Image (cartoon, rainbow, N blue to C red; front, side, top):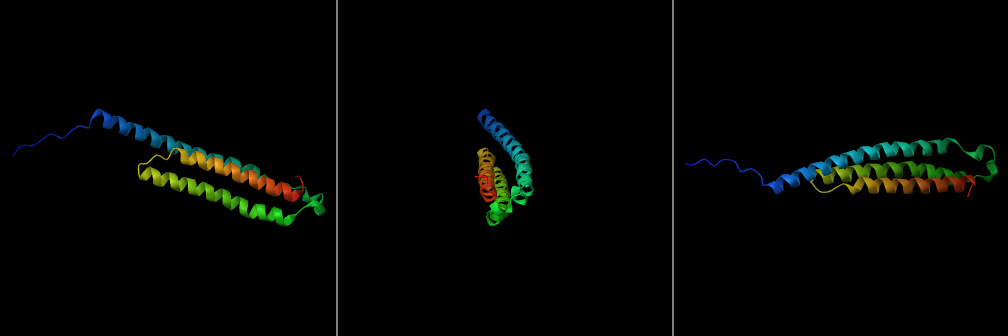
Length: 127
């Protein structure tokens, strides 16, 4: 019986493994950044829920539109956030590239906040 020594991976395999490890680390950093970005978006949107000119000019306000924007704005923002994290983690576990998912999530969250702000401004009568 002959015992064969374990084979060392080729240089190409080591390079691929290092690249995957760096890509995973960058994706986790982007997810952390997305988490902080989410809180930065929540500050002005939370302030918009409390600061309204409707108390000064109640006849000019469409309270139904403001309520619609506030009821669907925050859950939509949270849904985009959770979906982007879940998709990123699933892709990382499958060892696929997930680098762009947090970036796309951030862009989608910006779009959600813009739509939310436009609806609130329309309800206040600013637009």
